[in-house]
Amino acid sequence: MGATKIPGPGVVGSITPAVTAKKAVSRPDQGIIVNSGRTSTSSRVLMGACVGFVGPLLRTVPINHATIPVGAMAVNLLSRLRPEPHGIEREGITMDGFKMEMVRPAGGSRALRHGAVLYMHGGGFAVGGLHSHRAIAAGIARRTGLAVLNVEYRQLPGSISAAIDDCVLAYRWLLRHGADPARITFAGDSAGGYLTFATALRAREIGLPLPAALVGLSPLLDLDHVAKEAYVNAGRDAYIPLKGLSAVVRLGGLGALDPAMSPVNADLAGLPPVLLIAAEDEVLRYDCELMAHRLAAAGVPVTLELWRGQVHAFMSILPSMPESRAVLGRVAKFVRGALDTAQRARTA
Image 1 (cartoon, rainbow, N blue to C red):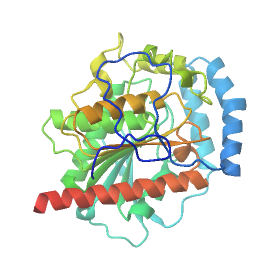
Image 2: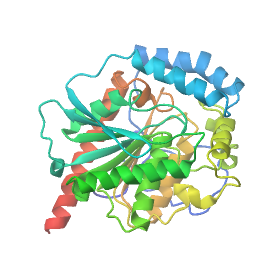
Image 3: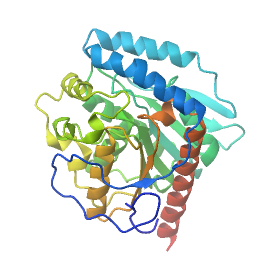
Image 4: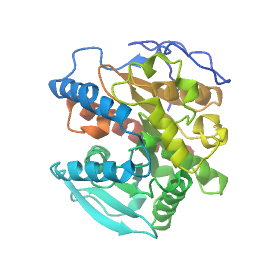
């Protein structure tokens, strides 16, 4: 995949010195700004809706055992209003305690030996599922030509550890059905970005082979909200409140936060190439910057891309938006390159 990339804005620059100790950072690091021109009309409408309605709602309504089911129902109903994605075939899979859906390009091979993407949806470990993230799974499948296994893992008010267990079981399912780990990519948005890394780390811990690549889309990678309080994007984010992260950690059965539960604090050496994509002004840019530095320090190839004028997880909220389609194209290019590199390394 080439050298690690944490370049300056708009150009390929030198690698920023690695940050090894966690500290509150008031200003964002420089990063590669992919779209420096005008944003699309649909992007501006989404931004307005998040700033004017979603943000105030999330800052006002408490996140607890009573409100989570209501939020989950609302997201599920809204996602069912979205037109079904075209150009795909899908197959439902029932596991012990959770569901999955295999999304394939229409007319494509059903043999998993050609490769697969294990996709873990976002939603704060509390909302979302197969319906809400079918469109982004379909977009990845069409662009990569690969099967995408979309996992509807157990959510809050359960435990985050249970969600990781489900994603590991999904990975085992892929391996058991003939998928080559050197042709598998883990990907996810927001909380699913957390699960992307947590699943890879858990897989390594229990002796499973690592996948060929990891993709985090607006990923949550540091569960410690206190570290982000002084970060300038905490006040710029269009709709994500830091108190929501605190509530998720509390409801996720973590009790007193264990730093080892945050992927940024793990032993990252030996992980496969990583692509991180975030909105320029979202609060989880902090997580991406910190993870990029620590991956670089561990010798892991990593690319961090920032998108101007976008909201957190925009590519999964509106996958048909021009900026989202461009992101999925970049993800597909990264995935194909990572799989080719892994295959060459195996045959060398």
